[in-house]
Length: 403
Ligand code: LMR
Image (cartoon, rainbow, N blue to C red; front, side, top):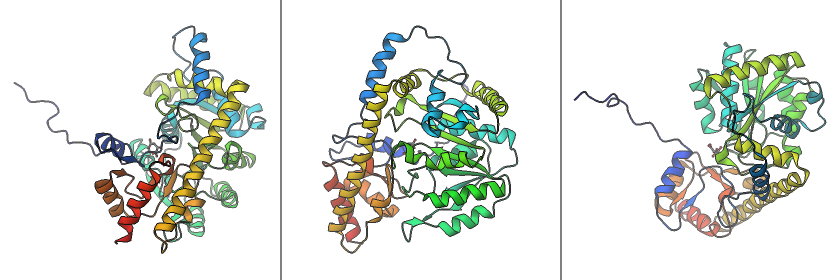
């Protein structure tokens, strides 16, 4: 018998985020809690199917009349609805056809399309990420052949930003460097840039001829749909040309349907047409054309006024519940560990809190209490509820208190 083709293949390392979910699923402990992955759960610990999505699915079930391929750039109407959501309904860029938007397989798919495009047309660029950034950013970009560096961002000493260091590092980047920025709800820290820093970054990008690349995966989870898009709209107002990778996974609680988009802000309608045609080439060589279902539902929910308003209410409900959990989490920890300051948790935005807990504490939480979080100390506040909160806080206080 010939030997297997695969006997030299080593095991891959578990994914730092989804690997935690795999370990959580394999754990049978009744009190287990998954604070690892960024998924919103309701008060009962369930990932909700939004009413707006249920209603859109009813509409789609009676209106779908064929199963042919979609156009390579996606569901007609969906891309325009996405532009309006990100850039504002009245944005002159839309009227001037200065945005090239293409449906993508989730936000990660948008990152992949963008990096392939960047690699092809700006072959000498390197890409810099905030330190830290979403665990999967570096992996996606390096896998596409990109050289990846970092710029200072988070200061563990203050649980805030390293603003002067960040700005000075960005000012020293070689012309043509790609800079990945988080539009809102910075993943993993939850610490967002104030508008004045965004303004300075926009100026630096113009002066240094940098390629801005904005990841917008949490619109609506910070301060609201409009406020969360403000940095992107400001970049557009300043006539920058740039990339925006966006996702509806979280805002529509539609994770498994993989619904995202890549929008490229260009200088003219002609450039837009060329960019779209190149992005279509890239899609064709990876997965040919996108899946339909999730984008159809999102397209319907965004364009039907009744469903749109229902969705905005449901999204606000998720945002407010997370904020409430932040307050309870921070207060409870303050009561249990009065010598430590947890007020920074209240200033963070979105699903995550960079808790400042060490990797040792995170490991002990998992081993002794079956509470799963990321070794970086990132905790998903959106998975907390009134039933698991005391258990989580007591476990943290017991471990931290004895160190
Ligand atoms: C996260 O950061 O947990 C989410 O964006 C989910 C993922 O794919 O990593």
